[in-house]
Amino acid sequence: MDISSRISGNTLICYIRGELDHHTANEIREYIDYNLENNPVKNLIIDMSELSFMDSSGIGVLIGRYKKVTALGGKTAVVNENKQISKVLEVSGIYDIIFSFPSIQQALNEL
Image 1 (cartoon, one colour):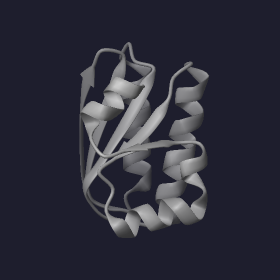
Image 2 (cartoon, rainbow, N blue to C red):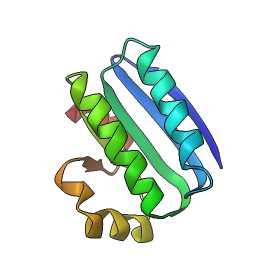
Image 3 (cartoon, rainbow, N blue to C red):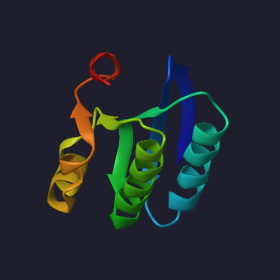
C-alpha cells in the first residue's frame, strides 16, 4: 500500500495504491487526517485508479473522512474506482453520501 497527495485550490487529492484493508486502514486514515488538519483545504478527492482491493475497513475510512470533511463545510468524492471496488461502494450505500466521478478534473469542477 502506498498513499500520496497533492492540493488543488481548497481540495486535498489523495492517491491510494495497493490494498485498503484492515492492515492498511489506520495508516491511510492517519495520513488523510493529518493532511486535512494541516492544510487549508475543505474538500477531499480520493483517486482509486491504482487501488486493487478494498474491504469493510475501507468503508470505515471513507465514512470517517466524509464526516471530517463535512464538518469543514466541504464535500468528499472518489474517482477512477474499478468495477469490484465500485460494487463494494454501491452495496455499502457510500454513493448516497460520497460523490463519484470518472476523473479528478471532473471532480474538481463539480466540488
